[in-house]
Image: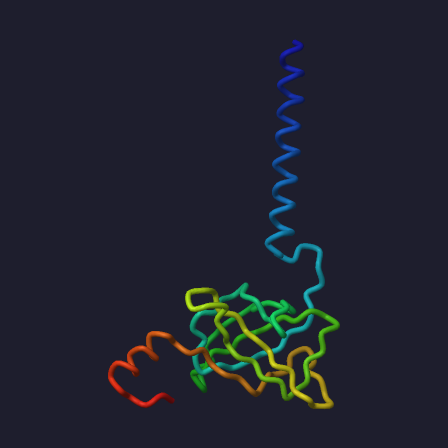
Length: 150
């Protein structure tokens, strides 16, 4: 009987530790449990290579949001990328969103260069000024074949 109680106590401790690891992992991975969603803006990119849902949105290298949706605009054939930005981070409406690589082989993210406009973007607005990603493979191919860059 004493061994059953000890086994039950050890099992409960193991489950509590496993639960603690799950909570720690969820907070470290920034899954957003218990956090406000923020506000959403849409940016249309000609090419959205290298970014994916869950990727970072940064201003001056500081994470201020994440990519929450990507879909093809069937009229313009651009990638409509929905960015969710933290509440309290105001973005001027003339800001530029560009897809930037963290390193040559690293992940890409959306970098926002703030503009100087008086008016700020609100929930549901569109970032009009965008710069698409640059493919390293395309650049190498153009260099080898001597073709001019875009």
